[in-house]
Image (cartoon, rainbow, N blue to C red; front, side, top):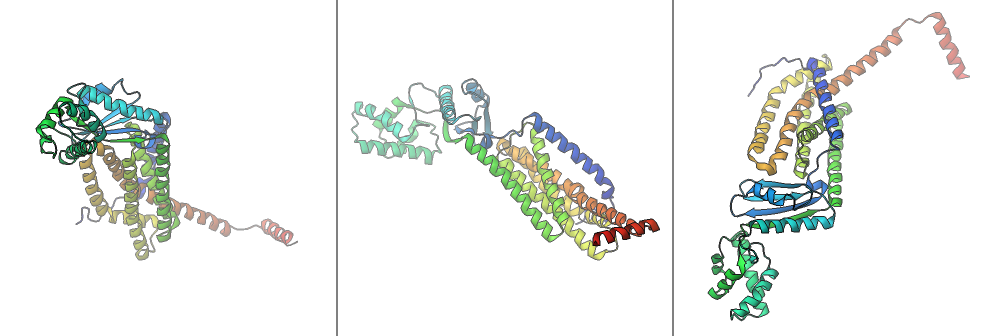
Length: 408
């Protein structure tokens, strides 16, 4: 399938404008990063607390934000996971002690705001030990005699039923009648002592400042190692200048993508770093396709100048570039529009990366190869002109004198 039949676009003439546009975007990126003190790192990198909360019904995001405002110090983020009725509550980086305090404050605030009955045990968020401790005396008062081992076993079965059969959320206490050992008398005690919050804390993650700094360093090193490996591979397969062009283009793509996140004040998380590494590989692949066609055309059209061959190769691969980039762009756009807030930043990185990566294969990588070739040709012409220039008798005598002096 050919979208373009023998296109004759003069890419060489457009390359200076493309390079100028890239320089403007890079300057804007560096300016934005300088004014904002660097990228806006996510909790994965700067450290913080992530609390995963699942609600029985649609999470009331605004109520959660208002409840946490002022209770938890620093910046607090609330993101909904589409289709799961879960939210992720995050806090910014502080010391290890403050991170644990923030976790407790989030849990207590949610309990105070959404727990239906105060003073009772929240069975949707209680652990085995807490449940056994709360039931010990009420069961004795109700005349239900259980040994310590039997009490612990009963608490284990209740918690296991809640987590495995009801995904951590009980709708009513009557559901516990299906648990072995929960007799009508035990169920009556549970109804007196326990209540059910409309949410459950599914998971708590604490990333300390040291871990965040280590993750930042590893993310940077992973990117540099990827670029270095690609430079070696392309230099071995083609030429060193081709490797330099491809690596500079990939670095250009990553930098502009980070710039877009800085302009939009978006956080850079681990998933965004993964997307940036993906787009680096995508950009390199597109560049290799163009360079491979250049190498084939140089064998067939060895009498033509390199810029003409590069221009022809770009036109010959134009249909392939548009089709692959277009389909990838549609998939990334679907993730961006329908993937929800959790995938939104990653999809944005892929969107920007596909566009910039396709653009850089022509206007950065190929432009560097053509520019290097033109520079080499000018040097050869200058050297040739000096060697072919007529030499006067005085200049010839001076050269002979210089040679004699060196021999002495």
